Length: 144
Length: 97
Image (cartoon, rainbow over all chains, first blue to last red; front, side, top):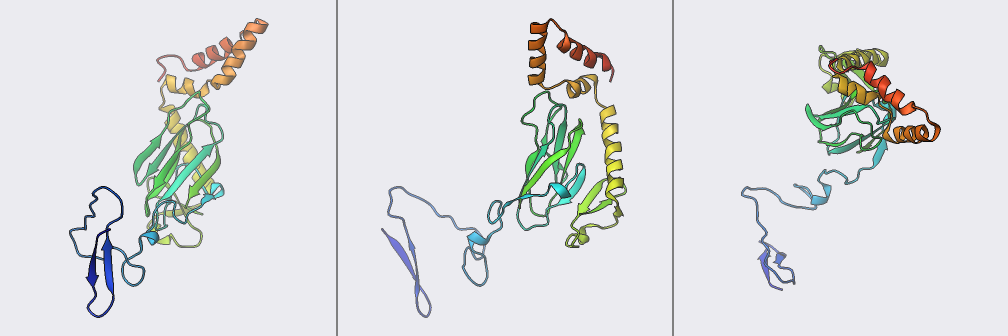
């Protein structure tokens, strides 16, 4: 295994080592100044960057959700939204995220595959509109 | 959640704890009942704009239920399924946009 040792100004050193496996890999650094990864002080450890799924749990928010009402993801990470209607037959829905159509269905005679799901970026608004039918919200869960 | 509407009657909901109050702007707080009325009115308007085919699709029973109708019709000599389809088609005639 080959490596490059960067010796510190005072004491200590950082060793950049290639893995002991076959093949050629490239680690490209960004073309700007910044801190890539630290465990303390400035910068952020990769494990603490807000991203979907990390440290999140599925939460039942049915009681506080309604159709055609705009909500805002005020968390610092993307969330995942999933709504289960009472009946999927003859109903259709739209999921709008940040003003853009993210998911859409048409009225259907099938009883499956007609439940809106989607990811909402941090800070974005979202709403589910019932565009046809008489379906009610049976379950609305968010990974947040 | 606290419910608000904007000047275009779009409905918004914000956390009760005030953590999203900075997003309210010039929206007006309304009751959930008022929000429901606005939403229902929008849905009725949207339904009225649908074509006959979409309205029919909304009213047809689930496929599994229609298959069951057809089975019993064959078994019993009835026309339940035919009556159902005929009723939906007559409720929303072709060309009735």
